[in-house]
Length: 343
Image (cartoon, rainbow, N blue to C red):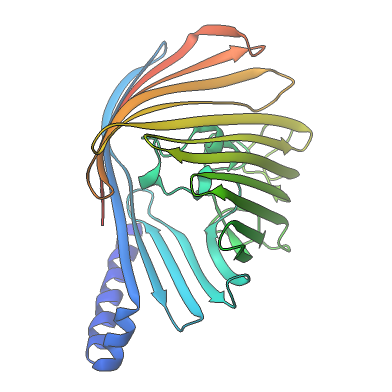
């Protein structure tokens, strides 16, 4: 069914483009205002643990992004994931009132966490993001909320002050993820503030507060039950050649259960277009249980043309009880390889 829908959409697009091409100079002006970009990630993962030994080739992620200027004030954006599962990720319109106040309505990334703002093709991790950001953003792992791709549907105000040194975002959203309509009023708000100390160092803070319906069961919350969901984070990002780094501390609360998370990623240039990657992350879903799941990453990446690159990384993931006692049979070793192209 999805394949038929995609083919139908493609045919309609070609028909529209063909019709537009016949409109002469007016159509050319419209097409000149539209840009099409995209990327593809092809990989091989080999993961070994006490319970399984698995290796597989796969298409990790492929997306096409369309941006266009409607007028000097109005613009739009569309992002579609074209590998399985095919889905619409971004669809929004923006209005630029001034440098200080802009508005956007539709489906797009939430302001929560700095790592969520980083495109997958720019992430230093082959998997696209740290486990802590994946969990607290509702991208995956969280049994109560998953599959949102770090996005939601709503309206946003954003802007910049002091010659781009201070950037803010304020968002009112449904709180139920993407491609999902709710039957009640929007129930989640989010905000972020980015302060650029200088041209090499940024500090980023974000919060999210709302109420949503659970997709699964955990922490005494049943599937389909409403619960309060709150998040906060503080992050730092810097670039002091030859080192680039980004780290973030995250806290979240689901009903009465508090969780914590963190990550730190570094990239060190060791040769032209070659970087060594080192990273660690960890998170606990319940601070009272004191079960920490931590990961360590070490690898190398080669930017052979523009944003196109080859990556190879080793990942060790372990579980700790009481934050100190290592559960030895929980070790998971992963060898991750990836080829990426961007156009």
